[in-house]
Image (cartoon, rainbow, N blue to C red):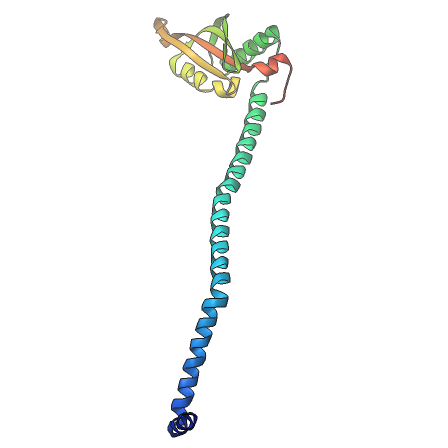
Length: 196
């Protein structure tokens, strides 16, 4: 049988024999991959998929820390702006005097005559103390409107007009204006603590 196999192999073309040997080598290599390399390759793919999933889940956390830093920056900016706008002294008498002076100077610039300013009730609104004042003045309608539009420059963003009423004063185009101003002071500033 050995002799017959040698005779059969010898009768085959050398190219066909090379092709058969290459096929056998490829078959052995494929079988080796299946046995030896398949498990580590599958493990590598699993680790790579886990890494990708963890990386994508950590990405929003990095965005949230950036968002947190942005909010902290905005809070510091707001605190600085609020402190800059609250130039009125912490004591009540000094605050009233500062407010009256600021309103009187502003009214004079616009040709408005202030007739009275009376303190109103106080109340706590969230972390602020609301201090209100009733103001009565008269002047030309357009000048009164311009004066009211300029209140943010005069009093800062911490003051709000809560109620107003305009009535004709008779001849000459004069108008009486009655309004309430509410000033907001942070309660922490009143207590003497300046930090958050």
